[in-house]
Image (cartoon, rainbow, N blue to C red; front, side):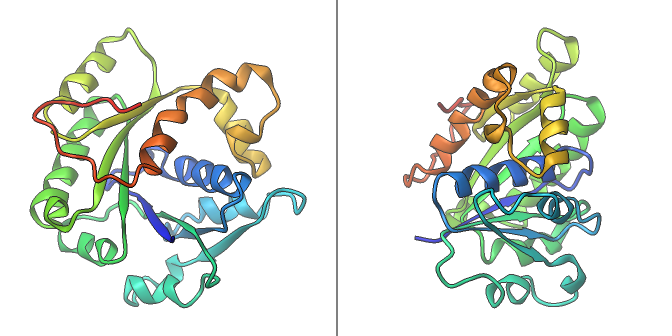
Length: 230
C-alpha cells in the first residue's frame, strides 16, 4: 500500500530535509520501494541523494521544485514508479494559508518539525493554525504529528517548547538531539540508521517512536492534551 508522508513547516531551517532524507533512507533499507520528492528550491534533499552511493538501497528522487507552478499532484504522480510504496515529500518553507491545500490533496501523514526557540515556536503556532483551520486536517483524516528537532534538554527554551506543544492537541512523536551525526550522515548521502559509528546508536533509537507511529494504520486521535507516542 502506498503511503505519502509530507514533512512540512512554514518556518525554514527547522531540519525538514534532514528528516525527509532520514525517513527515505530508513524505508529503503527496510525494503520498501521508496521515492523522495523535493519541493524545496534549495534542493537539499536532491543534493543529499546525488551523494548517495549506488551500493546503498535505491531511492527514487524527484526534483519537483521547478514545477511548483503546476498542480502539486501533477509534479509527482506521473513521475514515481508504479510500484512505489513510500513517498516522502520535502516541502518548501513559506507554505502558508490556502497554499497548504495544494499539498494536502495527496497526503496521508504530515510530520511537523519544530525547533526549541521562541522564534520557531511562534512561527509554528501560526502555521499550525492555518493547517487546522484552512487545511481542516482533522476533518480529512490526515494524521499529523510533531517532532522536536535539535533538542538540548534541561534548558529553559526546551521547557518553553514542551509547554507550547502541550497546547497544540497534537501528538509529540519524538525528540531528536542536536548532534553532528546528522551533519556527517547528510554529507555522505546516508541516513543516520546507515551509520556504523556506535556513538550514533542513541540517535538511531530516537527514530523508533516515529517509525512505529507512521506504520500504525490506526488514525491517531487528537488528545485533549499532549500525547507522547512510542
